[in-house]
Image (cartoon, rainbow, N blue to C red; front, side):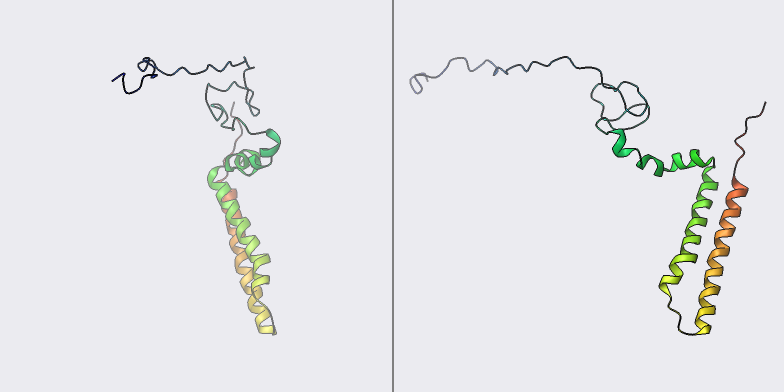
Length: 142
């Protein structure tokens, strides 16, 4: 066999050597949201769940749109917040969207649109009342 390849290396059994990459010691990365250290190789914080590479300025406005942050900010329970959102949806649809959908040509059409708006507004009032009734008191008892 050595006759076939006279200049072949006889060290075929050795694994290829990989050039070692020298890493410089880095400071420990901490979460921008809560200040805790990231676990090794983790993409997200194990305490607050924010991303490792995310900057606080780019995601700061988005955290206000999260359901649990809205719940804590308003001091509402889950059921109360859902009823509140339904009430806002009915109010928005009844007051704004109905006027954009229907065009009024006669007095009878105007009255029909107004009655339709009244129904949506009554639905929003009912949802707001349900939200008030479902609200839990968060007061601490002594």
